[in-house]
Image (cartoon, rainbow, N blue to C red; front, side, top):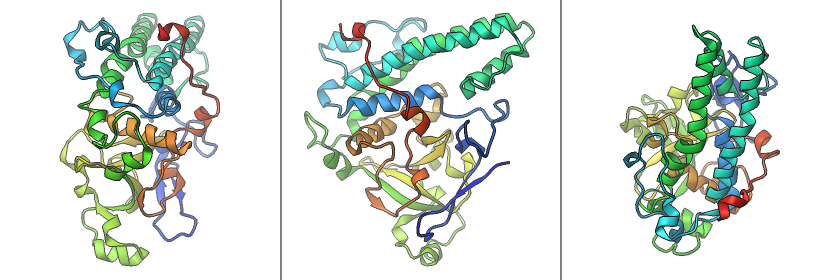
Length: 340
């Protein structure tokens, strides 16, 4: 099994040792077996992050007061809640919805090729979809399995991602809870990070001696944290770094929020994944409020790397929010019909 060990420039912290799932599908030193290692982040997640970064700050006036995606029929998204509230959608959301539509169109060629040739090579197919297509091939009726998979993916892009995930996060009770009271119309990055912080920390196992670790690496003890002291330890579905196969001790970026929660951002699939329960309680969710917050902060930095606002100078890989490969070829844009 491939393990990548990444050191900080001055080697004053423990190395960041990452398992195969934290590497890109295109990594030159590791080739994925998508059947054994389906990735946690799909390309659409990176694209949506780039869309939200391009959209810039999100005003309170953009956020919904109410939105309950569970009150509508599972096959219907219902009326546009922004139009009903007489508000305009954030630019980043317009870009994200357009990305979902374009990605849905792009994927149709994989189904067509699958139909034409059941032995078609899957190397250029996004890793998770390649895994699902392999499952379809092994089904008793591959053609019927493929039809069901295509319908599932179409509903994910057209209804589930925007209506049940993005709209739900873009509420005053969700993302709005991370905005300081001083942030009214525009989200000033400095104001956002006054009460919320990205902290470079050394995460250690529960049996570690905090003082001894701090002395070994010459760092303040307040920047060394046990896994059990992270908020993700209190909810079963929320993963810890060791659940993702990251060796401890590990230099990681930990989000500390005004609510008092502390969730590590875990390197995975060439980006970062928030470990909060909202993101992991439903596997189809592509974004949580903490990742939205990270995208807004990254937009102010004009970088795919999140800043360390407090704490230790951790490796760049522990701050890389978006895949460089996808960032280099994705251009956020909204389709004209989304502006009507």
